[in-house]
Image 1 (cartoon, rainbow, N blue to C red):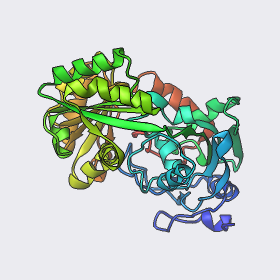
Image 2 (image 1 turned 180 degrees about the vertical axis):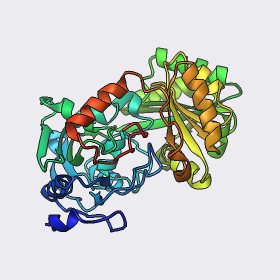
Image 3 (image 1 turned 45 degrees about the vertical axis):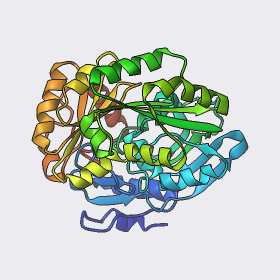
Amino acid sequence: MPDVEKSAQLTLHSPPLTPRTPQELADALAAAASQKRTITLSGASSKRLMAGPIEPADVSLSTAAMTRVLQYEPRDLTISVEAGVRYADLDRLLAQNRQMIPLDPPFSDTATVGGVLASNTSGSRRRLYGTARDLVIGMKFATLEGKLVQSGGMVVKNVAGLDMGKIMIGSFGTLAAIALANFKLIPRPSAEASFVIPFDSLDDAIAARDRILKGQIPPVAVDVLNQLAAAQLGYKGHLLALRVAGNAAAVDRCRRELATRDALVLEGKEESRFWKQVQEYTPHFLEKFAAGAVVRASCTLAQLHEVLSSCETAAIARAGTGVCYAYFTRADAAVRWLTLATRRGWKAIIEFAPDDQRAKLDLWPAPGNELEMMKKIKSLFDPNHLLNRGRLFRLI
């Protein structure tokens, strides 16, 4: 167990404390909070350029050493893991029993479960499976009072108290520290295939998207990549990417129906490689363009064409859910587009930006009524504003 008296005296320049159990995490939080020490909370820090920059703090805590699988019941389709478990390791473990947690988060090779939940990141398969709030059935988190609070459980039908856990998802560690999470698992489909269809115009790509969504094909994922994003993956034109899954007969039917649409069929390793490129597009972009920024905009399916048309840079849309990502090589260009998006009524934020820019950018210019509610919740969990100050897009 860490020396909690020493932990309260650590400075920003000290290495982070790495508690190994939920109780150690709670004790370390309580020790710092009892002396009103400000606290930085992190996991693997894979998404440190996401959301707002954390203000300098007195104490640094990392959940990276909390890596136990506490309970795994393949027959019950449930698993309980600590926050420091890497998502990639968890995915490999579940694959041994042909099971999955289909979140497709970026930075998946290094991201921890706690980080994925705290940032509420997901990918292409959210159209069918939803986000973390749909897959987490229970959670335990440590508060600044040193308490371990249990929300939900390990039974899929038991949703009592789950709302409190849902509040933690997407809070960027500004309320409490996620210690462990319980997930409902999804069986891996017996058959799967993907189809990449190029179009000369965005109009044609969106029209094909509309036909797919209204038709008999139930796609797991429906993404649209504009010309610039598609080119980065080695394709020409605007790209409609579909992923279907189920039994062999259903996948074969999809293959026959799409055969007349000039679709390129991807299966096996080729399919996995394509969706991995889409999943990790943001990390690769940020690695290539150190001064770059990523804007996320949410819109209706009907507005998707307008949103993509307004992007003069690379853009990828979850075309079945209305979430769009626009990639700018300079932060000032991202700000200009964000201003346009806000003016048109799209819900948009600067999701990633360089360290030297985030402190002065208006990352979330129009949070709406959500902001007052977020502040009220913050005052309940952290009345002295000690935890991850500035992390929630500089609003909290």
